[in-house]
Length: 386
Length: 104
Image (cartoon, rainbow over all chains, first blue to last red; front, side, top):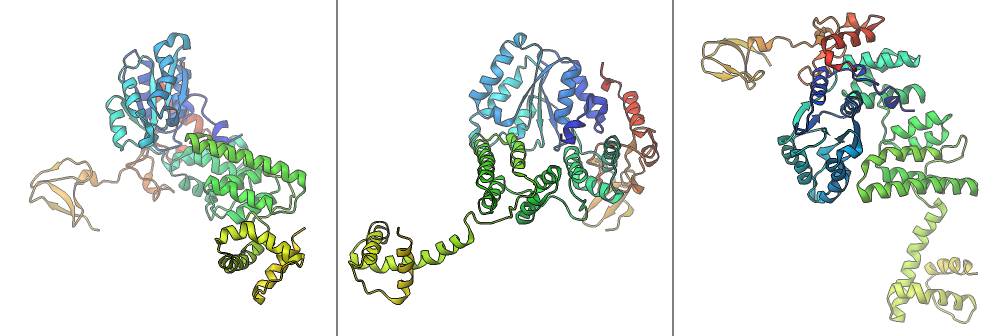
């Protein structure tokens, strides 16, 4: 289990930092009556905007309905989701709406999402809490006009260290002071990222704190993943590989497909890669980026101890790639030369004429005077005819 | 960059608090940077939430990486941090200072 979830505070007092902001939040929610302006929580990622909303809802007996920017992209979608809740709140118990990453609603694809949201915010019938990392965009200005804003600040590094040491104490483990300081500084006030990093370090492989363990080196990471001695180590390596998800899937595919593994294992691994590919396709198609967090947990199923898989950039064996490159070039030249004689295009010649031509040469029903440089490729192609 | 303490010949705006600096008031000036009140020039320090004293920012191990104007303004001083019961002390201090944060 991720430490960021395991140690997610159980009550507001367990959260550290931003005490004034938390007090303002509790004050707002505690005194909420119909018509009270919705709340906009602004602050960098990983400092507890979602957590305080969850805990506040729990403390005041609300049922929190969590939404993401991708859920409120269009006017129609907003009305579909929020309409029933706002129209007949009684049926849903005591709902509180939480919309995360509202600053993510932008661009032409929003189809009136912000406008529809602002209309709802003007006449709230249930508590509405919005969260955003920044409030500088024009669309945020429209939202800010109809909400009360509470700013969450990054946590002081000393306070992060204090919390980190408490987590390590609860886990019954420790880290060198240099590692702790590096982790705290690298997190830049982001508690979640700090906990993820420290978990990777403690449960994963040997600490390499002198350099950041977020890496973009695909080859080293894929090789280290398959050489890992435990699933925890493999997870740490996989999570630290920060590259484009599409590149990540492709790197695993090309490595698996070109490695000498059994057919059953290959089938099993291709199933996993296919599942990851389907998920990523869905994320891109529906712009549901929140689902991206599940990609690594799917790819982690590729880990099997001791499998002889090594990184390969290309998804075909080297010998075949070589043949495609060099023989392909020779066939192209041959086709260009003969296509002219036949008065057809090179493509038509290669597709329709060349196979018959090779048959005829093989059956010795046709003698054709070819340059020496072409003879080699013709012999090779004839050898491959069954 | 050197800040010079001089009496103002012209009115100006303090670059820290954005309030006016009047003519003849003694303030700090640096070429190309502007002016600031003497009070605004004093070293800013966070407050310890436990003992409510200064958090000791000038001597903090994170002094170079902590943007005092940006971060949450309550921290913990070294002495309170080194206490064996530091976390529970922190929680007690917060609940005492911010009673609204206590769950029912």
